[in-house]
Amino acid sequence: MSVIRINRSVLQHLLGCRYSSTVIRHEEEYTATPNYPPILDISYKKTRERKTDALYEEIKAVKTVEEKQIKLNMPRYYGYKSYLLYEDKCDYNNLALTQHVTRTHLITNETLPEFYSGINVDEVTNKLKAKIEEAVSIEIDGYQRLHDIKNEDITEAQIEDIISNSLCKQINRIIVNELFTDYSHLKEAQIDWNPRIESSWFVGGMNIPDYIRKSREGSEWRKQFLDNPFDRLMFYIGSPNLALRSKLPLKPIIPHSDSENPDLKVPEFKFDPRVVGITSEQKHIANIPGFWPGDPHKFSLLSFHKRGHIHRNEKYNDPQDNKEAIHRQGILASFGWLQAQANYLGFNTFNDVTYPLVTQTIVTSGKIWSFYAYQLNTIRFCERFYTENPKRNICWALPEMKLFETVENGKVVGFNDEVVKNILKFYMNPPENRLGVNLTPYLSSEEKLSADYKDDEKRQWLEEVYKYVASNRPRHRLGYEVYDWEKIYKIDNKTRFMDKRLRPFELFQNPYRRKLNERFIRYIPRKFREHLKRYQGRFEKDFWP
Image 1 (cartoon, rainbow, N blue to C red):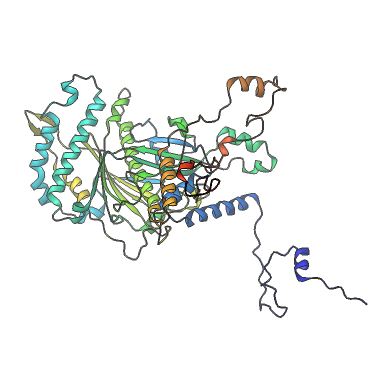
Image 2: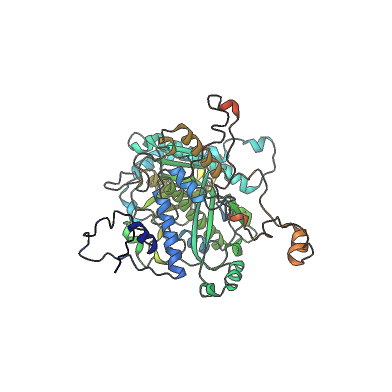
C-alpha cells in the first residue's frame, strides 16, 4: 500500500489554519489543557458592541491630545450633526434636557456644601468689604461708559452684561491682590478674559428620529431594534467673563465612589432636543477649554458668567422659569468646561475619567449672584453606557442672592456680606496634588502633545490639521445637497431616466459617510524640493492617527 505524503504548509492551507508555523513546528509539542478560542455571541447586538469597544480601545491607545481629537473626527469629513447648546441662549423648559445630556443631579441648598465649612472667611470679608463697595459704586454709577457717550441705543440685557463683565474683573483684582501672598495657588493662577469654551460629547437614552425608525422598519432583521435609543452629539458654546486656572486640580467635594449612589436621581428627557428650541448644525467634534494643549494650567478654579439673556424672555415674566434658566446655565457652563479639560487630559466621550474633576461657577448680573459647585464624575453616557454606567455628576446650587439693593449718591445701600463670603470661599479653596493618581493615564509617557514629536514634519502637520478641525470653519466647497429640481424630476417623478447617473443619490452613496482622511494629498511645488529628483517628494506625507 502506497503512503501519500503531504507538505505541512499545504496541509495547513487545506485545513484553513492561520496559525504560524512556530505553533506546530514540532509534533511533540502539546499543552496539558486544551486552549480553545473563546465562544463569541454572533448576534447583531453583541457583534456591534465588540466592534465599538475595539474602536474605543483604539482611540484610548492614541498617544497625544491632538491625535485623539483628530481620531474622534475621523468617521466624518463634513462633521457630525450636532445639537447646539449656547450658554447665553436659553429657551424655557431646558433644565430637564440639560440634566439629561450632562447626567447631572442638582442639589439646591441655602448654603454651600459641608466641604466649604472649614474655610474661615470672616476676617478677610471685613478687610475687603469697603474696597468691594467702592468698586460697586464706581462700576454702577461712577462714570460714563462708551455707549453713554455715543448715545448708542442698546438693550437692557447688553447694559447688564457690560456691568457684569467690568464688576467681575474689579472684584477679581481686589481679591487676588489681597490674598495672593497667603494663597500660592492664586499667585500662580492663570486668568483668562472672555475665553472660548467649546465642548462636544455623545448622549444616549433618547427616542430615535423618524428617519431612523423608517430605516429600521424597512429591514426585517432590524425590526427587533426598532425602539433602541439613538445617540446624539451635543455641542456646548460659551464664554465666561473671566476664568481662573491652576496647575493642580481642586479637591473632590465627595468621594468618587459616592457618585454611584442610586438616590442621585437624574431626570430623563426622551424627546428630540429640537422640541425645546435646540437647533442643529453640521460640526466637527471640538473640545476647547479656553486654551490650547500644552498649557501647564490645565485645571479649573473658578469662572464668572453673565446672565443678561434672562431679559430676552421678560415677556413671560415667570420667576420659576428664570430660576431654571440660571440653573441650566450653571450646569452647562460647569460641565462644558470640565468635559473639555478632561479631553486635554486624555479622556473623551468614549473613555471615561478615572478620577473626579471639580469647578466653581458664578453667574451674576453685578447685582444678583448665583453660586454653583460642580463635580464631574463621568463623561461616558453614550449608547449602552447610558444605562450601564451608574455614576452621576453632581451640582450644588445656591438660591439667588443680591450683593446690594441700590446705589444712591455714590453710596451702596443694603450691601450683603454673605455674597462676599461665598465668593471668598471659592477663591480660598486651594487645589492639591492627587497622590497616587495618574492624571493622564491614556496619554503616552513620552509624547503627550504633538509638540513632543521630534519629527518636524509630523509635528507641523498634526498641529495644522488639529487647529483646522477645531476651528470648525466651513469647507471651501459647499457641502452636498439634493437640489429641488432633482427631488421633483429624479426622485419623486422618474422623468430623467436618460441622464447619466453621476450624483451620489443615484449611485446609492452617502457623501456624509466620507471619512476625514478621504481627501487629495497636498502637492509640494518643485521649488520646495529642489534637492530631490524631479519625481520625488511630490506629495506631502500624511500622519493620520
